[in-house]
Length: 148
Ligand code: RB5
Image 1: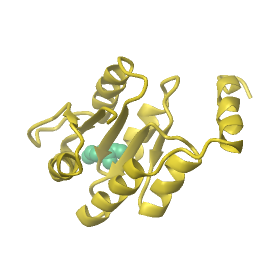
Image 2: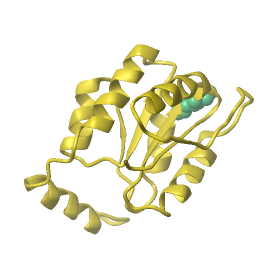
Image 3: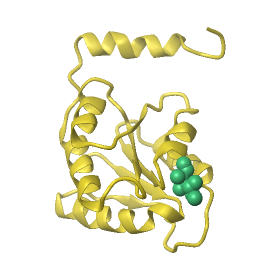
Image 4: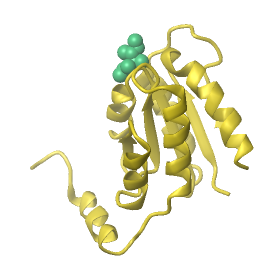
């Protein structure tokens, strides 16, 4: 079972709590990086904390939750080797893993219902990367950088 790190800003605390229960129920051992309260916390700091934990285990994955999921995905994708996908449906989550081998899932607790969030995470966790032609496409990421 791969390690699952999970973190949020203040907007995602409630959704994170529910996801922790589901992840445990599904047999995972999620590592909660907080926060534990709804006191304001800036999402780039939590994204940074989660990515730094992820570098310890190359086979782990991460879940980041903020109000829209947009800020978290922008922040997470600044890091080399991180393929963060903001998903609003279970179908997107399947593709984000199957085709894009995303290692971070970003969710918007203010724009996606709790039921949908649970479905999205289930689909993402259960879907394997398809490999094949997608491996080559992902390898092209290596050459993408500061110049066009
Ligand atoms: C916090 O108010 C909100 O800006 C944040 O949760 C997130 O939606 C940013 O993308």
